[in-house]
Image 1 (spheres, rainbow, N blue to C red):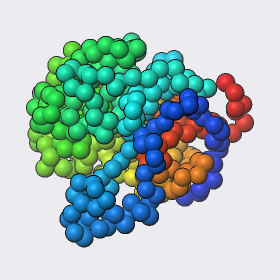
Image 2 (cartoon, one colour):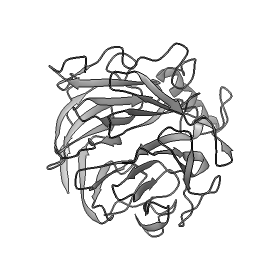
Image 3 (cartoon, rainbow, N blue to C red):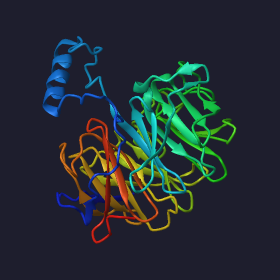
Length: 352
């Protein structure tokens, strides 16, 4: 096990914000047209639900926390450095170039007999052929779309049916696609397992405690307390967030356990490694104090940290998605902030 302590500095971590990125066209927006309540109001609503067990403000009862989570739920990047924003809004997938221009949008059509509910969005991935995988978490399914987002190609999971067998998921949370087409799914909000499927969607194997079902939580190697999202390095090792276990678990490309990385005080929600994946670093979206970390994969040490809770520039409100491009620019998205921000190493020219 590699263990370290999270950096506490609230500086820029050697990264600076690129202003006015992205450039949303007039009338386009992420999430809700009207912004969600600020943190203090959300916390008051959640406290009232916990106290009464009843809905407040028209939301469904949920004693565990906020019920309305709009905005950006995840991000992905393709081999051309285009940024895919998985968005709980009018356009579920919005694609930007590195300059921040919107180059494509879609995913809002009826897909495999079902019209998308934008609240189902969670995350997604782009494979090496440019096909796009979109997780519809609450529908217990993942849909594969063509590179232009105009054709349905395949579905993983069964629409509206939860389970933990070869053809069902229970609130899946993250996905990655290897070069041979094998698909890795973190089946985490309901189940506690990571599943591997081949390029046709046929189940191969899984990592989890017991059957990996809702009650099968564990802190041992290959066990989970909400496997959330993941990233892949040059050797196609899998770096998988065990969100409520507050750690990374590392597996090889055949889903064999290798090691874990833990950092004191963090609560990792997402991880980014460049598609080239050979520089030895990852970037972590850390819900604890709403920060981004640069992490050395060799020794598990934090080498840079920036961000804090807030809605201002360089701040985050539920930082939930992160990717890094081939030139080292980091893109971090926050759910309640309803935005994605771009950061580049200090000294990097703004224009690319």
